[in-house]
Amino acid sequence: MKIKNLIIVDHPLAKRDLTILRDKNTTPLEFRNAIKRISSVLITAVTKNFELKEIKVQTPLEKTTGYKLNHEVVIVPILRAGLTLVDPFLEMIPDASVGHIGLYRDEETLKPVDYYLKLPKNIKRAKVLIIDPMLATGGSATAAITFLKERGAKDITLVCLVAAPEGVTKVYSEHKDVKIYSIALDRTLNDRGYILPGLGDAGDRTFGTF
Image (tube, rainbow, N blue to C red; front, side, top):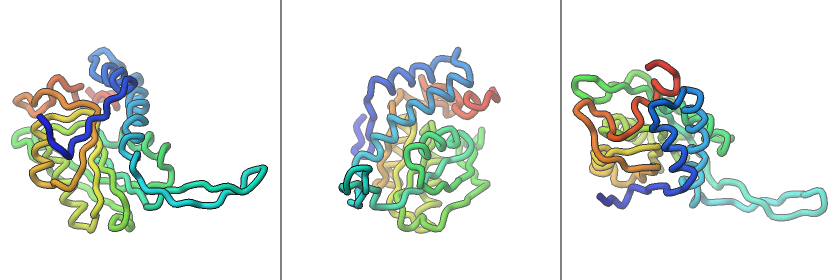
């Protein structure tokens, strides 16, 4: 399967940490630490082509040229599991704003139900990074993208750890302008909408609620 808007971040350290995340014996603490490490690899890939603005910097010895991002960044986790990625992203982009979208998946219909939305005022002019560990059916992701576009967001990127072909296809079919970054494209979904081989419920494994 090849879709032009899907970018697989292929990196040895990411593969190592994804293996830790997949392992059912990984503890919540180990899971959270692996999330932090793998997020650093993701952020580096996602921001590789961000535009820079030249600025003047005074070093202890002389003036020189430095750089800063040429645009604002808004990070939008999809609650609850997306919260696991917020701190690592803010460590790399400390001046980013953070919005929140609360969605949950109906266990019978597998469709997203929204219950919370809070966004910063600069959403219209910023680069928006939607973050969620899993892209499964694509229902939550497409709903989140739609919500953001309705509120003026124009430059949106979806960032996840693991994606299923079904989710990638759905996002692409409804939002062809949105790039998807993922560490892995897994095989398929099971009848409950979980990714195979996947890594289970990322939120439960992070917060120890399984």
